[in-house]
Every structure is written in C-alpha cells, then in structure tokens.
Image (cartoon, rainbow, N blue to C red; front, side, top):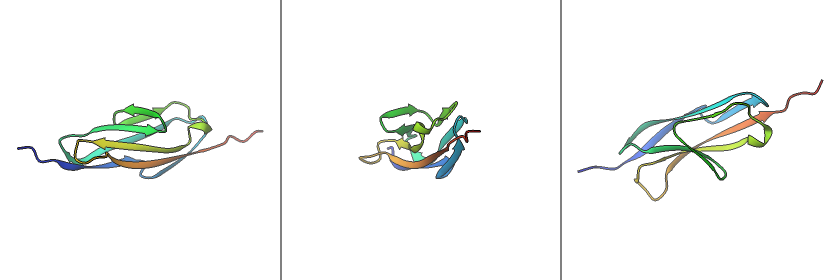
Length: 94
C-alpha cells in the first residue's frame, strides 16, 4: 500500500533575490520530503518550466516578479508551492 505524503519543498534563494539588469539568475527548488516523489516545476504568469532549476542568462526588468515552485504528487487538489520574488535593479546611465 502506498501512503501519500504531502510534498515539502525549499528554494534557493528562500524568498527574495535582487539582481542588476543583465545579470544571470538561477532559482533552485528542492524536495525535502513527499511520497510519491512529486514533479517539480517553476511558473511565472503563463510560463512554465519543468524541473528543479530555472536559469535566466541575462534578466531584464520585464522578467522581474513572483516565480512559484510547484510540487505535485497527487496528495491534494492543488500542488504545494513556494514563491520567490525576483527584483531587477536598473543599470545607471553614465
């Protein structure tokens, strides 16, 4: 018999990341516990990326905002999620 256990996830960074425009960004989501193993994905708006890591080579201001890591193993009606806010600072004009 398989016992369902709600996923527990953690993210790096934990809640907020502030980076200058044009910098690389790496968001990581890892499974702490959960049975069966959940599928992990990152979502921002309508965009979804499957997997534990979301990388952006050169972030722009329009990519700032809330990114959500979702973990779904069928435990409940909705996936477990954790949000990371990415703040992008503008480059100064010389």
